[in-house]
Image (cartoon, rainbow, N blue to C red; front, side):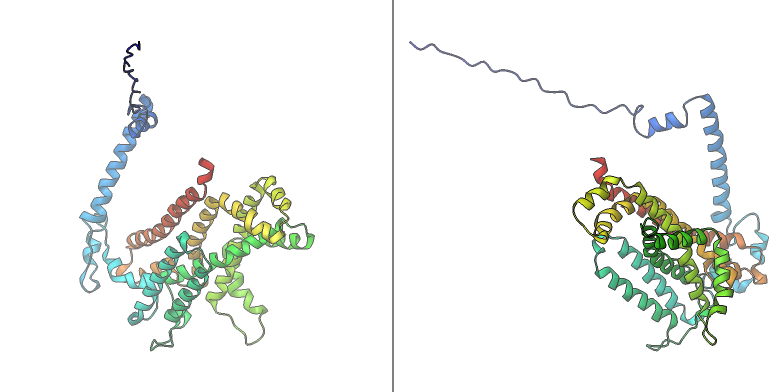
Length: 377
């Protein structure tokens, strides 16, 4: 006779839901408590600095916006002079913004350098996207730089010719920095590899180049390129002043970038070199596919820091008479009617430099985080 068996349900304990850490331990409130109000001295310093910052911010807003003068009729700057010390005179930027941005370029042709600047910015954006990192990117660069040259020089398509002596402002800064870094970077890679070469002659030449260029300031190289370099040219041959300055910047940037790249090559573990040799790869295949990508990935922050420094160093070309952005801004306030209002002009120029440098900095951070994802696994 079969016995009845009843199954009694077994209750399975449900694990408790994970609780979040209290806001006093993690998060912005915890950071503020740990870094700004950790003790009575820290609290006192935080409150004092906060008071000074708020007071300065209120004063700056009053000067820059509330009491500012944005325009004046027919260069009548008496209103700006009456408001000096109370409000900013942004009218100088309103009246002189074209000269600041484009220098002595013909006024009626300002659309050409403006379009060239837009092409430069678009070229930077396209080059920053990894999906465009293909061979076609070189064609994009060639097409963009050709279009910029046609716009700036003219002489075709119904555009009047404009000599380089008339170029100035932001286009000059973008031309010097873009061409300078674009040509200096591959030069720096070759020099960095040459410094680590086992061939004594190549190594000696690379060491001599780096130490010689890094041992003198950029101003001296610009003077050499502007004054002494033409003395070594054949009689009747002359190179444009802008091109001479461009060559000096390329050589100077190449030497500094070479040391940054060499630091990445030296920081790479020796096992990577041995593994590449074990695969039987040639020197150039080993360097191009294994060594160099890893080395450059390690030195992204110092590379971008050097890029930012040289972007700002292009302002030194003023000593050889080239009208870059900063020089055009200085010249804009030489006019007697606008003398004494340089602060507003320099703030505007500083904001332009800041926009470009900040964009490079943020992009380098995102690129470094994207390329180093494997290290966080």
